[in-house]
Length: 115
Length: 110
Image (cartoon, rainbow over all chains, first blue to last red; front, side, top):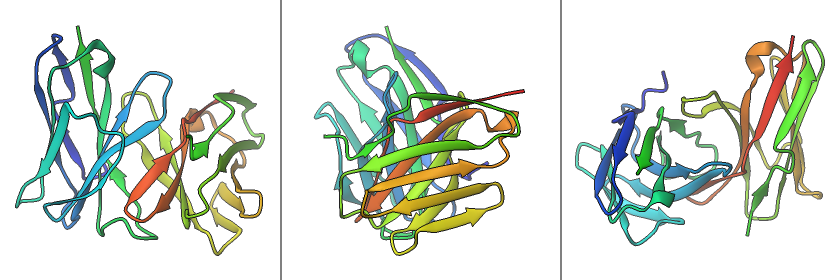
């Protein structure tokens, strides 16, 4: 158990819909990272929040957004869903802002299936 | 542009032998590298890391080698065990994020 909790574990929804994925970081971790893993692809970095503020942005679509709340949990919102959005979405947390020598601890992921 | 490459999508090794997983990177800004292991339906788990100022780091059966001039790192698992069968991701770290390779699926055959 990494200490990072993601809910729900599975999600099936129709195209055009909107979903919210939730992540609770390890106790004491200030950074939350979101990643997408599609079939046959590596982990793609989407976005990072550090202590409530957006810190870094990766390959995140405009239809996707995220936020980190005062209690440090984070939500990833995916809207106007397309079939190609079907993937595993991982959340990770780390103590610092992502500087050198910081390991990130991953949650078990949310499997999103868009039908 | 793939900053981290793992050119072998899969690798099969006999139990007890050495597994060598390779990773190449293009971004000279990386100053820390990590290996993650991922079982099906689970999140990746941290395995071993290496700072760019080192060329080798060892932890039990796992050793990571870094060749900065070649922008290449490798993970050695000796001896390989069936429980090592998983997908292994190499990642480079710089600034505030981690860049992952596509992963190599290791199968350790009994």
